[in-house]
Image (cartoon, rainbow, N blue to C red; front, side, top):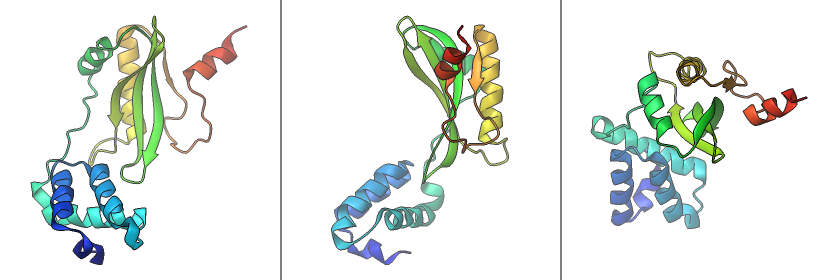
Length: 173
């Protein structure tokens, strides 16, 4: 384990472990980094301290369940947003904790806006996030009778991939 753990006060150790046990990795990293940054700890090392706590606490960690990707669940979530769903869209996102993942969003009309539908992470033994999001997004769009847009289902690192509003603007006469 990282030698930084011994520099944390007991109160902070308890806070970090509580976050880890509830699978709130970013909150745990923030607690470690806030406490030890004055001693020279960088963000990467704070992440390693928290990763070590995940290993120590092992099976006691209550991992968050993945968002459901079935049409019924996604349609129910879409119905909770104010406004009519005009487009279902998938977009790559990523961070240092989860690597690449896909966000499924409902692009809304009347009033305009967006609503989160699901976050699709890599699932052990499952299909890649892009393929899973593509399949779920297409099925939901078909169910709702709206277009589906995913600029790059196979490659997450497409720089400046257009979202649906940019694509639809380009198609207008």
